[in-house]
Length: 233
Ligand SMILES: C[S@@+](CC[C@H](N)C(=O)[O-])C[C@H]1O[C@@H](n2cnc3c(N)ncnc32)[C@H](O)[C@@H]1O
Image 1: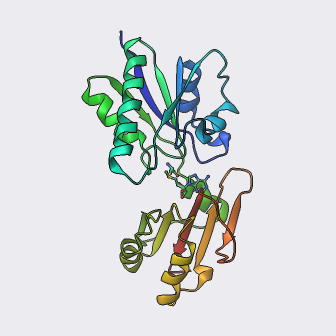
Image 2 (image 1 turned 30 degrees about the vertical axis):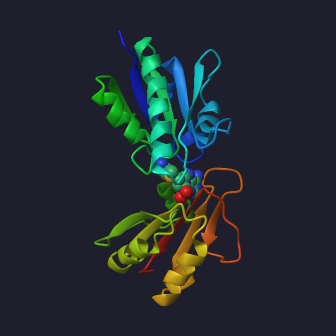
């Protein structure tokens, strides 16, 4: 019998925020797969689960999902990862593939899930807490309340135009992959006369060096940085 693939969201950093379903599946799966952007890199999602799941005796598989700007390089990586996953499933092994935060939020896992199912394998997606939900909880801020609207954008590619369009049409905006776009965000706010104090930075949520607080344009922020802009405060 072929194995089953589980795509498991493990939350943004604090292992106590893993769901019971995630823990149950991680405990019973023979193989744990984790995504990396570079080979040999530390897997953040793997580090989170290791704090609550005994992974000794399990097969740990690193899957490379390059962030190379070249589409073809990224597709090739996904194809290689697919081959690895299918090989293990054909051996009858269940695979738990861990993802930071939630599986449906900017996660490569969803491509894998689609392609694996297209090849006739069984999969299950286990949601996790997205980084902005934990960040908002720590900041004691609603993401949206009453009749307010809310949107999420990514600014990794400095696609300011899209982010600006969305900001102009919603009450609350979460900007993910904001690490390299802080100056652009400050510019967007200034142009619209939205006070900087309406932006909250949620960085390394649930991780060491967590920062939840005002947007300080002078400060350096790492990859795990998300910004919440609230137009009505
Ligand atoms: C590839 S996306 C993954 C999103 C993830 N699936 C989620 O549900 O949050 C990476 C981006 O998510 C955000 N992120 C992930 N973990 C985070 C954390 N612990 N603290 C703050 N932001 C985080 C950052 O914006 C980061 O650049």
